[in-house]
Image 1: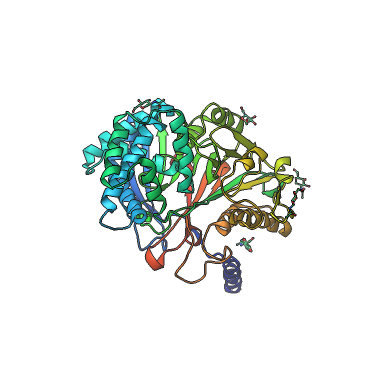
Image 2: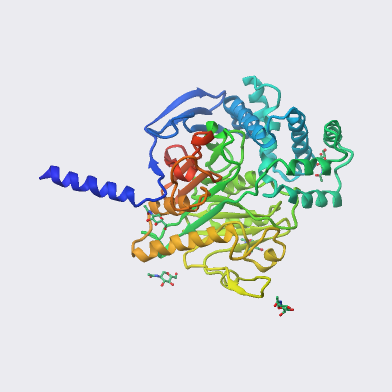
Length: 509
Ligand SMILES: *[C@@H]1O[C@H](CO)[C@@H](O)[C@H](O)[C@H]1NC(C)=O
Ligand SMILES: *[C@@H]1O[C@H](CO)[C@@H](O)[C@H](O)[C@H]1NC(C)=O
Ligand SMILES: *[C@@H]1O[C@H](CO)[C@@H](O)[C@H](O)[C@H]1NC(C)=O
Ligand SMILES: *[C@@H]1O[C@H](CO)[C@@H](O)[C@H](O)[C@H]1NC(C)=O
Ligand SMILES: *[C@@H]1O[C@H](CO)[C@@H](O)[C@H](O)[C@H]1NC(C)=O
């Protein structure tokens, strides 16, 4: 009798798995294996996840604790080598392996250093400069060859802050020409030398050369729902990073836990070489998100967004304090950002350009009224807000933002298609009459990750798409579900088709 019940239950479990057309799995780590201890309170471990990420290193767990310098030092010591490997892998995939690639790489690095030293560094709060100094010292102690780890990390911050279409860097350069700090500094002179040795007459000419390197426009998406959509009204949030796929950086997947002695503990999900947050959650239940939004004006005279998201996690405990901090710091290039809060049980999105932020939550009248008129004068609705949910892909709904938007908008864009998919997925859950659970935020997030032609199935290898990171958050329970791209070459698998690793962060906060 018991046997029959077990068989029926097993069948039900299979049927359940079968109804997940996307094909991802969800698994908890079976063990946490210490790799090394830092010089201070930091440590590096791997997260063993049975049956997942088998052809590469398992996700790392990097824990940092103490003063800013101590956290930075242990970062450089424990993960500087991996950070450098990520950078080499990325640049090789961007620049190819022509004979000029090493010269191009050198010039690109000097370009990133110039932008950091002369512009981006100026708005960065001192505590992060201190982390970077620590990282350089820790990296030197680890013998990271050829580069200071602090510099490596600032290159990662600038790279992540570039516009989604590299052509649009021209607006950043125009902003800098209007606020010159550009032509006499040592960073600029070093860059100019490198650019000339490549046979280019100017930095602008070099930027044009980079644009031809097949840098595809980037995308991304973010989602939050709450209130009567979920079992106890809690907020669930999610985010996809659709970026440069299959570059080999997935060998350095990492969950970084920061426990600063002067701020709230928080965690980021991503890859080596990134000291900021692509996505993250704090011990106070704040979640942070990002998606591209190609939007004028653009500037690098602001707070590099990956560290700004950590700053919010470190210092906010609800939406009001998060938005207050947001408003008191400066935007850079156009991005959509998202902030979730367990205390408020709510999610907001911020459409930004260098000049301002437009804050949205559910049922915003600007979104409800948004229409697009094509060149045949046909007008169609493009905004479909829902109660107790808000989400974004890569287009804005604020009228002022729309007027300055640099990419196509309208019903036939990929951004609109994914916006619609999220809408429909949320409505699908509502139609079942059930209150959403963590399984549902994982599913909605996984569905909309860029995985090639069909969002609803992963299909057979080889996969296409650009989904390198897919993360769902249950901040009330302090749980993160994080999936990374897996494998390489023709065996590459988008994050949303891979394994979401269930991370109970309460054990590490
Ligand atoms: C200009 O660049 C120098 C370093 O090259 C830097 O110290 C200074 O803060 C920069 N000024 C601004 C306004 O960014
Ligand atoms: C859920 O809440 C929204 C507004 O907060 C309301 O419009 C809607 O009717 C509610 N749905 C149910 C099923 O109670
Ligand atoms: C932050 O700025 C936005 C946009 O200007 C505004 O809507 C919001 O009320 C501000 N919030 C706080 C807490 O300052
Ligand atoms: C569209 O409408 C505008 C203003 O109403 C008009 O000037 C224009 O000729 C129309 N274009 C087409 C293709 O009908
Ligand atoms: C995931 O979402 C898709 C699209 O809404 C739906 O068809 C599918 O049944 C969902 N799967 C699970 C396991 O919830």
